[in-house]
Length: 116
Image (cartoon, rainbow, N blue to C red; front, side, top):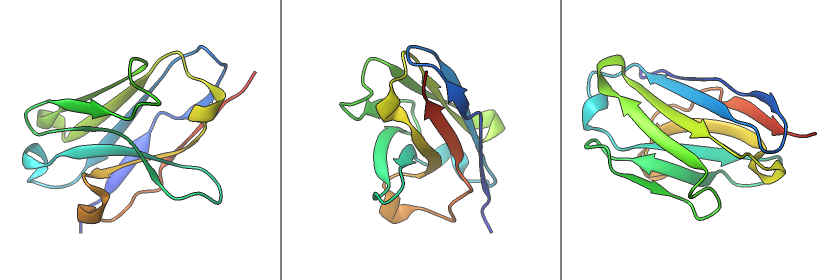
């Protein structure tokens, strides 16, 4: 069974930065388009960004210019560099295959809280 583990969340002040990491236990990682998703209480999981197997990245308008997604196929890892975070970035962040309909087992996610 594929395991997904997200780390790196925490409490950060507005304008600050965080770097999220995700490791996926699959031998086919390098072929997968990987996405970052965010969920807040009572809301549906929403798209944040995704990165293709070749490294092309697409961002939701709400994070474009502030977040940067990258990957290291040798480590089965995908990263989300979050800069100039804002309170609306608060939520539990998950990574998984993209699109969500193709997702494998969901991990626990990592909580990001942006507050002064």
